[in-house]
Image (tube, rainbow, N blue to C red; front, side):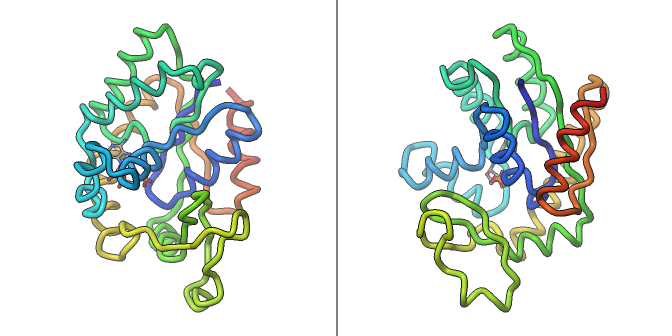
Length: 215
Ligand code: AMP
């Protein structure tokens, strides 16, 4: 199974990708996580990407397509994959189509997760991520003081630098300008499934599976 999870920042792509990855036994390929790892390890890519990510901007299409090319050719993607956060622009979507054609592979579904903009802003303001295992924890602002340790691995819970309110607005603006057109790109291919992501995590997972069963 080869899936693309599509949607604005904060819609729950990462959360759902991890669940689907466990249930379908295929890897989650999160370009945001790959970039954050490169930043943490201070690689050449990480040094280049850090200021771009912190400003809420997009890393260049050539760099992103290069990263995805390496990952999709790797052993771990042999049985399938879930792309989370890629493609984010039309050139990335075109680059992916070319790459898949070269590798003789096809995407099965593009799942677009959809919520209201006000809900996105609320969710991004309420999320902390573990600096060790990466799990996203949702908190109510007034409970922040009590939630500083990851319940899964005991790591430290931190706000992502790019979840600051002014950066969130920039990311949403870029989403509308550069990423939203990718949805139309996939609608034309007939692969697109839209799923309302306003409900609970369990409801959204159920609706994703339902959307894949109804061609
Ligand atoms: P995410 O964790 O998916 O929200 O990604 C965090 C940040 O990484 C984004 O705001 C971008 O700066 C960068 N990034 C992740 N994926 C891509 C992509 N496909 N194209 C360009 N930049 C990306």
